[in-house]
Image (tube, rainbow, N blue to C red; front, side, top):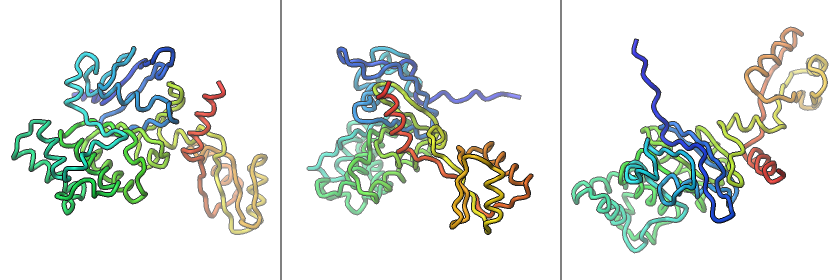
Length: 316
């Protein structure tokens, strides 16, 4: 039987370092981003998020570390990296004095796609980002969400397999943000890798397969959204019963640490909500012959994770 080797990661860094004079911006960062996933890098202002994107996208050089983007070293083979990636930065690259269509055709010309192919690609992307009706209007007349979608479409002209999105929904209203989220989901479904930096914790929770928290140039946490939430105290399992007798029996069975609410007929049990903890809890109740009518798991959200992890780093 032939074993198919695993696909190489889209992005990997080992010991990534960057300093400006005496200021250490990145202090030995290790990252692995599988192809066809969304990886979110979180952190407060000045944590090093944009610097990381700039290094991986060949805009600036690293001081040290082993880096691969699309299988290529950004320092030794920057042209190969640039051929594989697209970048949408914090600030729009849209020319406001051109129409949406003209902006895309300009990018197609920069990619040397040729007149016919460039127009075809522009029309395809205008449809994809739902800007067909506004295609021949000046970009200065677009709303913020429309401008952001056009900016992302300009990144897609070259059909990149890895896209860096540096705070792509900053300043957008909720409807526009969700429009950008949908485009990101469609790209990933097509096999594109997204490296996302954001200060919107719900955005990372909604989109990312894995999340890393960066603070003062160091990674202070990494994992899935659920894994990160379980790192923070405060998680609990809420049990609801139909009568007070069963509530009292459950409280005695589970012992210290539980909090009963007789009015709501609920019992709050500390726990991380993991499969093992839930199984053990239900087995204890089952052995005691106590039936639970409703069970729900409550974990801290990413805001709690972000604040706890960055505060811990500040204390050290």
